[in-house]
Image 1 (cartoon, one colour):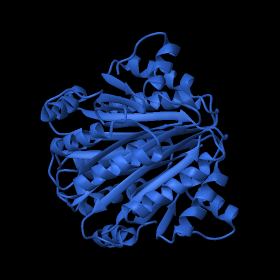
Image 2: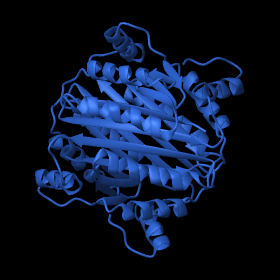
Image 3: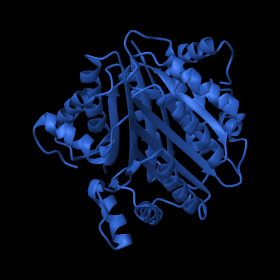
Image 4: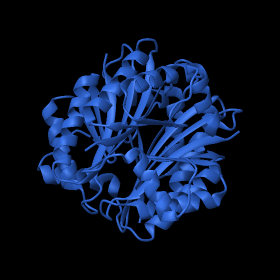
Length: 103
Length: 103
Length: 103
Length: 103
């Protein structure tokens, strides 16, 4: 009984380019071992509440260590008795349309 | 060194009206003792990461207990060495404009 | 048949303090004449799709004029045959709980 | 000078499964001809303000036609003089880490 969590997090006091900060978060996400998908506006991870929020907290602590202000947005979709939603949600839409979509 | 967290959470399988669910979350938020402000689209709470996310988790567990699908969005603004941002951010904008705003 | 739209918008390349930019958006929102409420994490406005998004676009154009990168998040709650949701949603929660909440 | 817009939109009064509604939005997005990427929590589109918001409005009008309440969240990242951000942002993170990520 897992959930999907999408989040994006970036400093707002470090100038226009924040790619280095995002890269560090991705290292933390990968190290968690949780299944994830990076997209151009955030990262979607699948897991239980505690393990998902632990990953986001690690990213926050790492980023807060060397910036003065940060912004984070999180979106959660929880559904009872569902798993593998990281792939199943997209497949469900593709099946309805009868074709592959850009992912 | 606190942060502001705004969140909204609602079931998506319980029909059009979700006020009862929202009311239960507000009871949990109030019981936390953390300073908060309810607005028409969410609730803003001020505190530390762990205590803020503990409140959101309690709301999630309570809501997940009797719905099959829920949606939650969270927005965080962290700033080093700042506190009382629940009131200070609005006052700062009002001071710049030289007048009171609708809040 | 109106909707609620909450949004926040800020430059991410102008350093830690963005109050001047937020103040300019509030001037645009006020000038629209649409009912609104400022909260510590955003502004909620009530109206029709076109007039709401026209306000957000004006804020975007004004901000993009003198920054190099900006972030904007928008949340919309549309409900058929409902109006005055700016006040009605909070009152509905307060009525359920039988007491006033912090707003 | 384009921007990235991620959005998700779903009815909250039509029960647990909303895949049919999401599929219709994807048809509208594809018909727009704008470059997009579907992810498990939303769709990211690249373009100018007016064309992006026109797509979201079409999805809204189509969905509002046969539901009574809907929720929509939109996130925008605008950056001066940048284009192809749909692919460039992910590549930039991969380049920093020196390896491919799950996308």
